[in-house]
Structure formats: C-alpha cells, structure tokens
Amino acid sequence: MAIRFRKYFKQCKGKRSEGDRHGKVITKGIECDGKRGRLCPENVPSPCGRWLLEFFDDHKQWVSLSFKDVRSKKDAERRLSMFIADRERGKLNLPKKKAIPTLSEYSKTYLEFYRMAKENTLSMKRRAVGALVKYLGEYPIDKISQFIIEKYRIDRKEKDKVKDSSINIDIAILSHVYTVAIKAGIMDKNPCKDVKRLKVTQTKDRVLSQSEIALLLDKLHGKDRLMVLVGLFTGLRLGGVLGLSWQDIDFNNGIISSSHKTGKLVSIPLSDYLEGELLRYKVNNLGDGVFDNKEITKNVVAEYSEHFGKLFKGLGIHDFTFHNLRHTFSSILQGELGIGAVVVQGMTGHSSLGMLQKYSHTGLDNKQKAIESLTEYVMGSQKTCLAIAQ
Image (cartoon, rainbow, N blue to C red; front, side):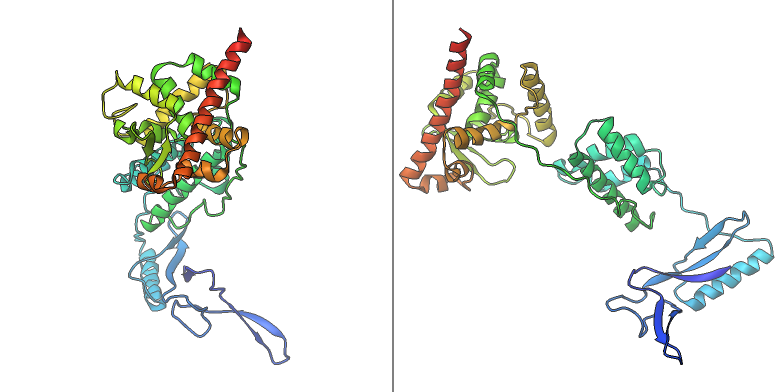
C-alpha cells in the first residue's frame, strides 16, 4: 500500500535540475504534497491535485482511490493506516465502485440537459447521438477509446455513406458528452481529445444548365413548381421560401422580403412573371403562409429538402438540392448575364425594406433589371429547348 499525489496540471513536471559538487547537472524528483512552493510553475492554483491511496484489494486487483476528506499528506497517511488495520483484521471495506453507464444510457441524461435548448440545436444533438448510439451504444463510456472512435468514423463513412463534415459533427457531440460526464464526476478524461478532425474539401456548387431549367419548368406543377420558381428568381434558402407569408410580398411595389436564417430582413425585387405566378397561386391558397402554415422548424426544412432531392433525381437531375437553386441564381446573374457582384449581393443583403427603398432610383432599377434579365434567361431557356425538341 502507498499514497501518491496526482497532479491536475501538465506544468507540474515533478523534477528539478541542480549541480553536484563536481559541477555536473543532475535531475531529482520533487516530493509534492499539493501545497504551493517555490518550485511550482506560475499560474497553477493550490491545491493543484488530489491524494490517492493505492493498493491491491482482496481480489488482487490494483485499486487507486481518492476521498473528498483527504486533503493533505497527513490525512492520506491516516486513511492508509486505517486500511492497513482493516486488512489485518480481514475486514477491508472498500467503497463501492461507481457504476459506469453505457453510451446509450448516458446519452439520455445528456439530451435531458438540453431539452430546453433551441429546436435546431436539440435536433442536431439528437441526430448525432442517434448515430453514435447505433454503433457505440453498448460500450460503457469509460471503455470507448480513440481506436473505437476511429472505427466508428470508418463505419459511418463506408456503411452510412455520410460526409466527413457530418462525421466531424458527430465526434464534436461525443466530445461534449464526455465534457458533461467529466463535470459530473463520472469520467476523468475525454477520449476524443486527441482525435483529429477529418479534412473537409470544398466542392464546387452545383448549378442548373439551361436544359435542366427547361425540364423543371416543363415537368413540375402546382406548389412544387412555384417553390422552385421562387428559389430560382429570389435566391432565398429553402427555409426562407417555406417561411414566406403573403404579408411578406408587396405586390404594389414588386418586392418580396424574408428574415429567415440570419434574422435580418432581406428584400428582393419581384419580376413581372413571378408576381403573376404568385397571384394566380394565391387565388386557391388563402392561408397566412404562402406554402406552409405550420411552424418552419429544421425538421420541416429537412423533410422538404428530401422531397425536392427525390423530385430532382426522378427527373434525371442528379446531385442537386433545393439549396443549389440559390447557387444557380447567383451563377446565372454573374456568370451568364454579367451582373456585377455588388448588385447581386445587394439584392439579398439589405437589412430592411426601408433601406432598399432609400437607395437611389438608379440603384433600385439596376436590381429590378437584373431580376428581369434573369427571368428572360430562364424563360428563354424553356423556349429554346422546346424549339430544339420540336
């Protein structure tokens, strides 16, 4: 049996160097009792660790224990002498070991801590935790090693076909699970600490070709077609399109506004064509929301995104999502029509409707002309492709 002081801080090397009588430098260990001394590194608080009692138990297992009431070397020696006396009497009463939960069990506790978090945050955590539990749920959390985490990453990539960026989020959530467990006194270390993030390469944004635009306009109908038109003619994200209410559309001034994602109100001029399509659609859709009347949560956006992904794929437009309509919007304006980047950015960068209206008449005209040029390009694509087909 023995006692040992475990340091919390890496700065405590536990060694010092000094010269002997012949001038040679020798290194000696420093006997540390947890109290601040002249050899302690700077900015390390006191006490800087804890006293451990270390010995073999009745089953010949090495035991390392710490106690809240053992705060000094003297306390540790006193407690050790009690253990020795108990062993000699054959009554070594050791404290019960903490029950270590599995990742599946502790994940429920972890998610409970965040039940009041924003829905987007909670949804992200639930998704990541679900994936982690699928592969690692049966492991006690103290048995998950760096090797097991690496195997998890391989399984996610090869079996689930997920992107490296999603795997990085999973590991970040797992690391946070351990941070919470450490604060709760269940774990001493985080196995994710030395796991390096997977390198994520930036891929080129997918944009629609003229023939693909014509195909969408020809094959889509009703709500799906109008949502695609709004995304293509405004550059709004899917959440912004779904969150539109009829109050957001100023038909008198030809302006559509959205505050989705950033919380800042952005306003885009309406083309005559899109305005006409919206007015025709409104006749049979009198609810407050243009496309959906329920609260637009991250899960709702994800459901619509999956719907459009399947829709595009079914039409033969592969590797394309609703969000790529936003990239197509910018790409056509700048790459095909030569509209300046400042004008394109300005159409989605105003902080309020008032700011847009305060711009000079020439500035507003430039944005309206850009939208009309975009509309002519898109509708012209359909006419050209139909003529070729005939």
